[in-house]
Image 1 (cartoon, rainbow, N blue to C red):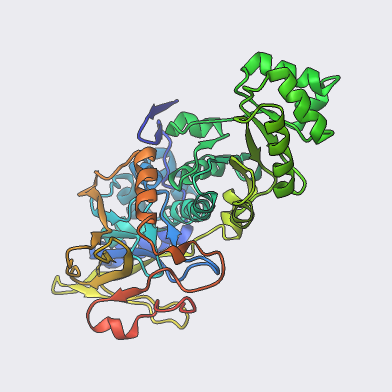
Image 2 (image 1 turned 30 degrees about the vertical axis):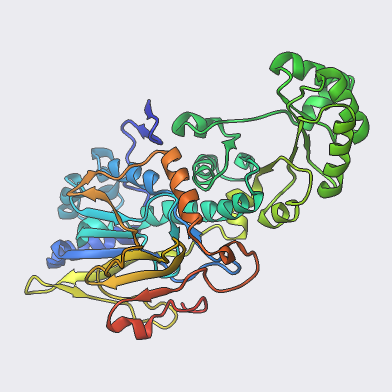
Length: 456
């Protein structure tokens, strides 16, 4: 059983998310409960040390899904029994888990926000015990969804206003497909082929027919006639099963010049699109659109920018992050309460895996014309807004209560707005530095480990 709403949630009744975690989270919990450190006030930070090669920015997605996961993060009787029977936790730890509720605060970048190396994408403030249990599942959600959104944003940027259709369900895990559809929508995709994503999140869905439908019929004309009779002249006909030129002619003969679109799924797409456009125009079908598919990625979409193409269907490259299926987010303890009750910055100093201690605050510094210039991060206190800046960390959870949900449409609108703040160099597909630098306020600025893409 499930309940649905249009904010982009699907609450699965009686479905706990508490075991979507790693064993070692419970190991640390049990030991810290035993020695008394579990209840120390702590601050965890989720961030990426670098961007993938060729990326000038990243896109946050999965925040609303993360809040859904948190809402169902409960150790029910069956879960606790499993942990005890398997010897994963002792009885005192099991008793503590049975009453687990997150009661702290969470601040984060909103779905659709842009991030850079060192951006404090998520800040979790609570006891050590409450926060450490959330590490694995938070990373799972944000690493996956943000990887898809980061790839999707590059695709929609280069599509230049032409609609992109998400159609990668057959290339990933069935639940990852649903999450990918939402992440792609946040980053500007117009529709999805995935009906579960349409049901859960209210994303518009779209679909036409595969080559098998044409092959099923005795002739191509029979297939086109069947589809138009069933779906109307606004449908999209797949025209490259046999002879392309003949198929386009049949399509217009069957549907008339009001045919919605034709789809090309193979071959030299730029030249074929031009050929089909000329043919459609000669037949009077000047408003019939041309949709292209066939393992597209942002590079191919950029190459197709001058072509006679009206829309793109993207699958494999999208749902796999276009070669980078994770953002490399990490979740690190950056501050904890000391014996006097003060919050003490702590940091990992391991070579190649440096972190910066202290509770972070973040601004996007912008010029007077609204162009992003710097990711400005304050350590211990907020940086000063010079009048053109924008706060990045939004309240998501206050004293355990979820307060920061947004709808998919709101997230998409936010992304398109903040992407427009970036300098034009951010759209480049070649290797290079992040679109804007990350700078830390105070003493840390001189030894910023995220100052270049080679930093670890």
